Length: 304
Ligand code: CP
Image 1: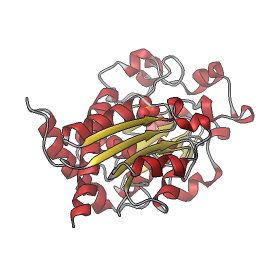
Image 2 (image 1 turned 120 degrees about the horizontal axis):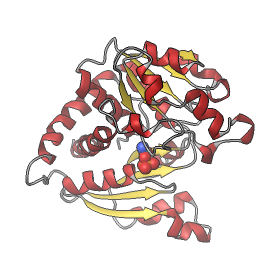
Image 3 (image 1 turned 180 degrees about the vertical axis):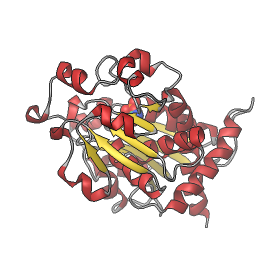
Image 4 (image 1 turned 135 degrees about the vertical axis):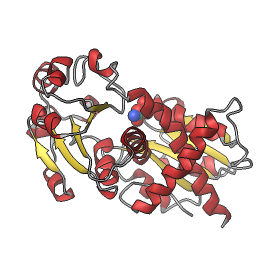
């Protein structure tokens, strides 16, 4: 059984195949009839142990556009609250003849754990601070859409790198596609292992913005913070917040990204998030085509 557990396991060719497949599906979902029968007779369970707006709705729309049967599970109103384990929960759902599982969980490695214990395709929709592979695929796909060739381009990832699965998956994807990557944030929010991944580091947001062609701005992950690491939001906004004045001071026009959800006025100001430089809603739009591509390619492998 094949899975998408992380970007670390993919080759550049895998990523390019996902992009080419997403190009096709992006064209499909812009037609008056947005649906194709590719996943007819496939049943997919979206199993979310953590909150989500974009990822959950985007997967559900992708599955429906591919004509899959879809069931949705949120731990917050489930029997997990009565003490049922992850494995029992998933095995019970799978016994209802489910073929694929899309799972978000707060524990790093949760999707890998599941892949060793169940007989269904698993797509990791975010596992704690570890990976968020479809986010990195839609982010790099969105960069490619804007500037065609990612190879040789400079991408700065700015924010709470320590707690961000989006940062790690983006680093893997960007490096595999030949981009140069810089991570930027307060020293306490840059993990020690990060330079082993072949990225530059900076504590100076202006330096990062002057260096890059694309800035991917991340939110402070309050839900994962331990107090000892955490600058106050006011302090963070003062030293690392990206606003119009700062962007205008760097003397060139860069592309601005954010995976969402945005904390307006903290890591990014509204006059940047809503500006022509921002491709934040393009990222969300592309998420559906990318997730259609991932599910379609996994389903193809089931048949071979
Ligand atoms: N980008 C992202 O994962 O957003 P959600 O948490 O709303 O799914």
